[in-house]
Image (cartoon, rainbow, N blue to C red; front, side, top):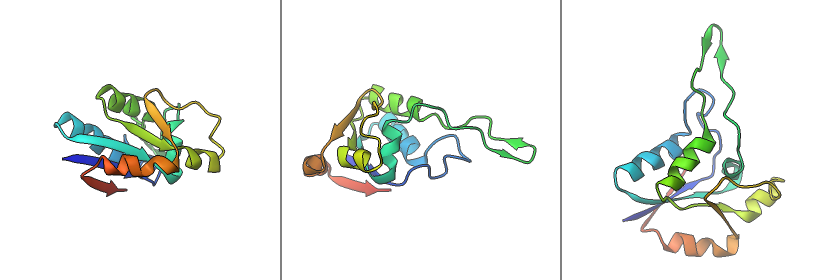
Length: 126
């Protein structure tokens, strides 16, 4: 069974956690043998061009000592041969079209979205 993870909400739990929960889930599903792919849409298209580790969160005396590192997380996905796509028009609408995407992330047009969806047996929207 092929699963397409569609991530549309960016930075959900990213400030207080070590990872984006769905990117983390995708990596763990792949490590467990799942056949998955990831599609970045909407605000999550920023993940495709993110190149810095998230700043540490400070709450009083407590500090999040292991902030999220999306560059590492997406490198792990592509190293595990997980296809990762980002929608070109979503990048353009957010002023990100000229920025370089992380290695292994494929930029696709909205016109080609049906091709990506047709490859999946299940689509999980986040």
